[in-house]
Image (tube, rainbow, N blue to C red; front, side):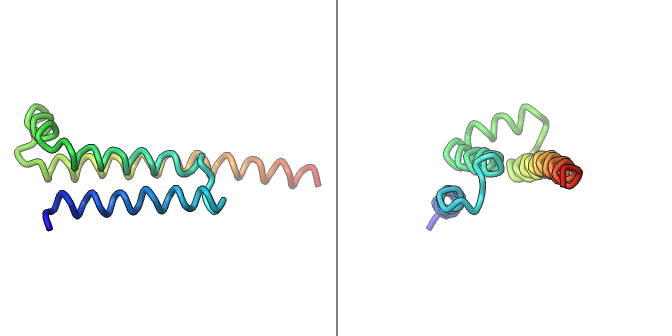
Length: 101
């Protein structure tokens, strides 16, 4: 089995798991949206690796793996930021509800 096929299988399984969590209402679409974007980006990388090799070279990365590591690091920071914003909004709602009680 090639690495590309394995990657696609894993990403599709993660995508399906996220959709199933949304369907069962264990995860709201609001929170799932950022995760779905990251999974779709991963699928794009797996399918268009030649394009990403050119982009990596244009940005000064000598290896595609270094570019991908950097890109997924940026994605992790993005997800952390999005989740922090959601957490702060929830905290504000909780404080407002506590004041009403």
